Length: 74
Image (cartoon, rainbow, N blue to C red; front, side, top):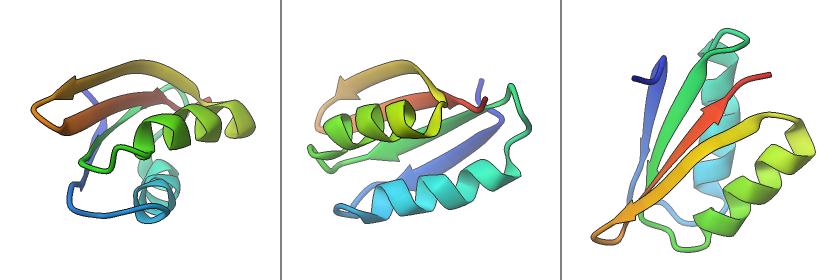
């Protein structure tokens, strides 16, 4: 279970990333943020976001056009 969940469904790039960056401020170090998105571009966006910020992309998944990302804050 994630510490914080962000529902970014219906939002297009770059909004899911921008909202995730803001939401991570409320996540303690070592905690997790779950993001739900319907933007297909968010898959590559969150991989790149984690590489550049140093956070860990723990899990990704897709179910019926909805994407789920679990990010661990470092």
